[in-house]
Length: 126
Image (cartoon, rainbow, N blue to C red; front, side, top):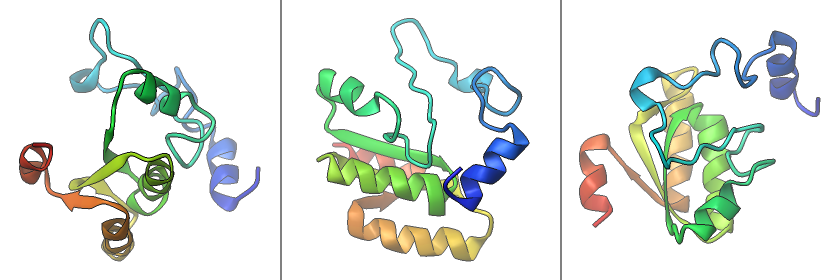
């Protein structure tokens, strides 16, 4: 492993498709026709076909939620911007290990794209 984070994830056997903790929760289960892409790194784009899937579908906006704001969300946002996507982070649908890390990441993310709340998301997409 090339970093303390990836080493900890590997040692714990975490984030392995089909294993406890990596499953999609019932409320977000894909429906017929939905595409799923497994996240295998600290960016949703790294090591996946996410960019190809989005471009093939004509997607220009990427909306980011999840954990950790200061790691995976931030790195995915960097990649999305570098790949030419309009990037929107939903601040109250992301989290980090502590509020200071979350807030610092959101401050950086404001330079990369838009940071909105869940309530502000729909108007931001218009």
